[in-house]
Amino acid sequence: MEALDYHAEERRKAEFDVEEMKIVWAGSRQAYEISDRVARLVASDPVFRKDNRTMLSRKDLFKDTLRKAAHAWKRIIELRLSEEEASKLRFFVDQPVFTDLHWGMFIPAIKGQGNEEQQQKWLPMAYKMQIIGCYAQTELGHGSNVQGLETTATFDPETDEFVIHSPTLTSSKWWPGGLGKVSTHALIYARLITDGQDHGVHGFIVQLRSLDDHLPLPGITVGDIGMKFGSGAYNSMDNGVLRFDHVRILRDQMLMGVSQVTREGKFMQSDVPRQLVYGTMVYVRQKIVADASCALSRAVCIATRYSVVRRQFGSHNGGPETQVIDYKTQQSRLFPLLASAYAFRFVGEWLKWLYTDVTQRLQASDFSTLPEVHACTAGLKSVTTSATADAIEECRKLCGGHGYLSSSGLPELFAVYVPACTYEGDNVVLLLQVARFLMKTVSQLGSGKKPVGTIAYMGRSEHLLQCRCEVERAEDWLKPNVILEAFEARAARMSVTCAKNLNNFANQEEGFAQLATDLAEAAVAHVQLIIVSKFIEKLQQDIPGKGVKRQLEILFNVYALSLLHKHLGDFVASGCITPKQGALANEQLRLLYSQVHFDNPSLLLYMVLLLERLLQSTSF
Ligand SMILES: CCCCCCCC/C=C\CCCCCCCCC/C=C/C(=O)SCCNC(=O)CCNC(=O)[C@H](O)C(C)(C)COP(=O)(O)OP(=O)(O)OC[C@H]1O[C@@H](n2cnc3c(N)ncnc32)[C@H](O)[C@@H]1OP(=O)(O)O
Ligand SMILES: Cc1cc2nc3c(=O)[nH]c(=O)nc-3n(C[C@H](O)[C@H](O)[C@H](O)COP(=O)(O)OP(=O)(O)OC[C@H]3O[C@@H](n4cnc5c(N)ncnc54)[C@H](O)[C@@H]3O)c2cc1C
Image (cartoon, rainbow, N blue to C red):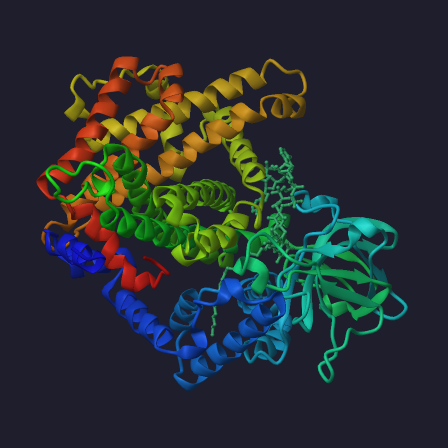
């Protein structure tokens, strides 16, 4: 049989409503139709070809990216694409580009932190792309520690201007995408100084290049920071370096939504939390979580197609060899990744809802859910990107030697994806933010303040700290409430243990530093609980289509039990389950793989195969 026949054979065996599953993946019928239409648009347009990317020189790759960006913009206008359609177009073009930062950070920062007048002044130009902006926060010396930034914005009351200056080499802006070659403007973060007093880090809009000849303006030194990891990949982006030599900007170029400086040079803090200065990062972290399932499903799709076609060993009497997908080890490495793609998809949908909710609350001056939203976006960004980066590498190995070829699509996918573990907050630094939130929650447990939302389970910690898992047989692990309680108990116990251990330190900050590893692990347990619980909530919804819900239930069990198996040490050490129950979970996991394979050898496979057209991956 030819490779295509193997694929057709696997597709033929599917026993669930494929069209309905596509809609579940997309989120709605309308979202699916948009995605399908835009995928075809991109696939049929030769300007958007991507098969030669890894062979282009940096210069040619960059030119290719500019050409694609200009063409995309032309198509968006000609076809009057909506924001959702335009954003899908960006996804299918699939090449990091300066417009990501313009639309994804520069504009949201002005919207989120600018006042009415500033929005009216800057947004129309930005929407028409008459100016192009980047997000220049990170410096050579400080990225994670935003409060450590050194660039200064000193108010000069005589001229009603700020003087933007890079006082040291380490204060050079370093990394911003779109900065190196393209941006005319930057949203920079600098220490605000009025009358000799330092008010911490705030956002300022600074013009970098002339709108006439694109040359840097006086006092501005700007350039590209050079080649990055891998061929093709993130090298399509002009990540840049920027230095200021006493550059003057008007006072109203400080974003004044969170704090203001008056004409007299008086600093005024609005009635809103100062953390809103970090709002753009929260927005993008939420987007990154939604994107993780897309990158992961691309990799899983490639590895699955390969595993179906590839045959090694096991030929009897000259018959065909065994499809590698039939090896239990291949299944146990691949199926949890497929299940994770769906889990991340659903939690991403929920996070989008949470973000929309907090935005509406902020408009009504309700800041109550901000800490939880910060913890959820930070934690989910960390856990989903780390898992996805690891999964892409695992998919490469699942394709044997062929996975190492550029033409498999996996090396470039890995190289382009892996910085997601670092940008928008290093993943460990973000987990420690979640841990800080969890420790605060535990310390308030006796105070009468009832934990709500994703930490509501902490309100039942008395029960969760002493409950016994009732699993006696492997199939007991198929019950969602059994799984949920095990994950809740593990998360609660790990957090409470950390909190107790912190109390052994006279100095809390010192304790936090010493126990950082345990705290990060407690944060992971909490975030995995969120993902598991959102998958369960999804399954409680009405999901139409023959066999669709059943397949999702199998994937849920595979996701949850594979996590339980991977983190068995945590579950057993915290006393949530016994070693025997751990072994039963593993037995059930094995049964799930083989049950899927026995009942219908292609069900899981098919779910990935149908994504192929949607995701337009470079694949076998
Ligand atoms: C027509 C339309 C066309 C459309 C076309 C579509 C185009 C595409 C559209 C969209 C694409 C979107 C995707 C964009 C592409 C992404 C590419 C990536 C590019 C990368 C960019 C970057 O990396 S930007 C730089 C990011 N940097 C970081 O993330 C730095 C990480 N560090 C921090 O965030 C902070 O320093 C840290 C949180 C670690 C510490 O903060 P700090 O104030 O120093 O200290 P701390 O004491 O810990 O905290 C105090 C207090 O504040 C709370 N808190 C902290 N952060 C937040 C927050 N963000 N929100 C709310 N609260 C926060 C913290 O918990 C503490 O609370 P308490 O303990 O005091 O209660
Ligand atoms: C491809 C790419 C695109 C980017 N785009 C932009 C952009 O457009 N705009 C922008 O402003 N920035 C951008 N950045 C910068 C990015 O946001 C930072 O690199 C990121 O925030 C991490 O900061 P850092 O580089 O200072 O890492 P560091 O903080 O130096 O991290 C180094 C190591 O130290 C550890 N570490 C640091 N602090 C702690 C701590 N408190 N506790 C425990 N461990 C710690 C980390 O876990 C990590 O292992 C980009 C980066 C990349 C890679």
